[in-house]
Length: 404
Image (cartoon, rainbow, N blue to C red; front, side, top):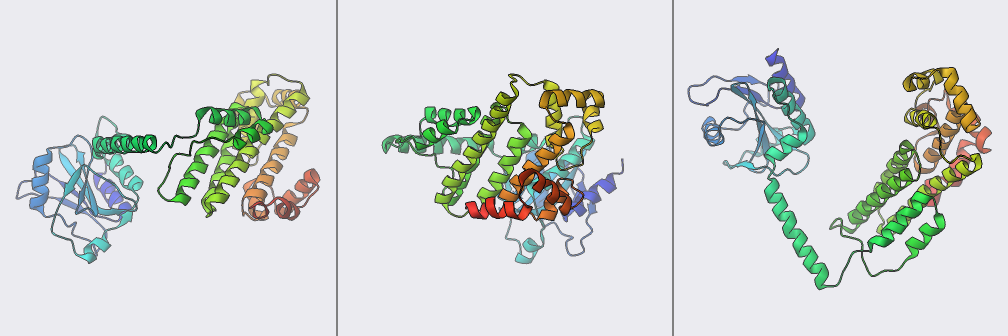
C-alpha cells in the first residue's frame, strides 16, 4: 500500500499537518511529516508534552482524539507499530472529549491558521487510516464511544432529568396525556379528518415538553417531532414511504424558514391534515376500486416509481428490477389499477409538481428538469391537461405564500 499517498491525502483533505511517529517517543526520534501548506509547518505540540502524553496513554488500540487548551483538536491513529498524528484542526461545532491537554496559550495567529472542518470529515479520515491497517474495522459510533465521556454525559443527563422531574411535580406541570396523542395519530393513520380535528381541539392541563431553551427553537423541534410521527402514522395507513418522506422533507424545510412560534403551531397542524387527507384519498381510491388488498407486485412497482420520479422511468427498468416480464407487468398493472403504467407515472409526476408548486420556491424550469420532463413547456402542457390550470395559476392559487 502507498502509505505516503494516503497520509498526504488526509493532510490535503483536512488542510492540516500529518506526522508518522515512532512508539515510544524517545529522543532522538525520526518522524515523517506530510503537509503542503507553506504557512503551517508547526503543529504546536512540543515533543516533550506529546511524549509525556503518550507515556500516560500507552499504545492505543483505536484512534484517540484529544483537545489542547479547549480550542484545537488532534488525533492519534495506531498504524502497525507507529502512530499517525493529525492536527491541529478546529471544529465547526462543540465537542467534549475525554483527553484534554493544557499548554501555554497559543498565539492568535496560530489558532486562526488552524483549519476549520466538520467532525464528520475529520472522523472519516481517521477511520480510513485505521481500518486500512487494522484487522478489526471501527465505525463512527465506535470512535465516538471510545473518545467522548459517555459516563459524564449520562450522569449529567440523569441529574438534569431528576431536577426536571422534581420541578414538574413540584409545580404540577404534567406533560400532555398520551391517550390524546394516540387519538391524534390514529386519526391520521385512518385518514379521519373529523377525528383529527376533535383530537386537536381537546383541552387538557398538560404541557408540551421543553425541547429547547429558546422558544422559537423549541417550537421548531416540536414541529419536527409532530411531522415525523404524522409521517409514520400515514405510512401505517398505507401511504407509500417515499411519498410520506418527501412530504416530511418539504414540511420540515418550511418550518425552519418560519420565525413566529405561534404560526408554527398552526402550520404543523395543517401538515397533519395534509397527511390525513393523503390517507383519506388513498382509502377513497381503494373503496372505488373495490379492492381490500392490493397486489404486492403492484405496490413494489409503485414504490420503484416513487423512488425514481425525478428520472426518466422506463417500464423495462421497472420490470427488470422486479424480475418480471415487461409485458406481463404492464398487463398486471392495467388490470389492477385501471390505467397504464405510463399514465400512472405521469399522474404522480403531476401530483409531485403540485406539491413543489405549493411548498417550494423552485422555478417552473427547475421543477420540469427535476421531474425528467423534456422542457418547461412539456410539463406545462401535461399539467394543464390534468388540472385545467397553468403552472403559474396553480402556484398563485395554492402557493405557500398565500397559505402563510
